[in-house]
Length: 298
Image (cartoon, rainbow, N blue to C red):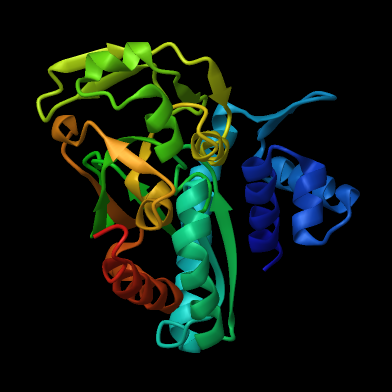
């Protein structure tokens, strides 16, 4: 058991790249974490980390050992779960990720409903506008928007969204409505600065129309982009779900719909496949039902 606990401590240090953060998450003292890793290195006969005053990095041997430890710990957890019956009853911590606005608008209500139905489960959500590596970051379930690369992960399609150009009615009253993608050059543009943003906008199902926009307003969040668009400052391009309620209530309207690209699929993705635990299976079942029933993404 001491060896397994040392492995768990080593894995946490590797995941956080910090002895202090690993100690905090494991509810241990920093010296205890340091001793556990040092004892493991002594038993193995090689250094697992390179340490400086500012950086903790895995050595080449540490990287190999890290992957082996994760597999061993996962097998132990699976064996314990099977023995305790948790494959039949949702228990433990569920790690879920999605983009920021999708998570806030669509996933949080499902998570709170799920927690109400499963008192032995705790949820840790990670809402970020970047692609999260599920295995490296210990994620159980992710919502992915866009076409998926080939992988061994399991995926269930739950909806679709469109990329739309939108503006406030007051803006269109003052500046007119663009009829062609090229007309955007004469309009005030608002753009995001996330990793998903680009100043080259493609239109048409074959992407034959390309427009390079020159925004005067950049926002580092899509919430900011949408807020500025609602205030009538200019036009923006967002995903349809992000402004669904604003469209329904007439606060925003879309343009250039004849030039839209094919919709982007929405999937629930998880890495465990048929070996998924009860908590993962139960959450996916609920999320599939709720998301497929949502009129804003279907």
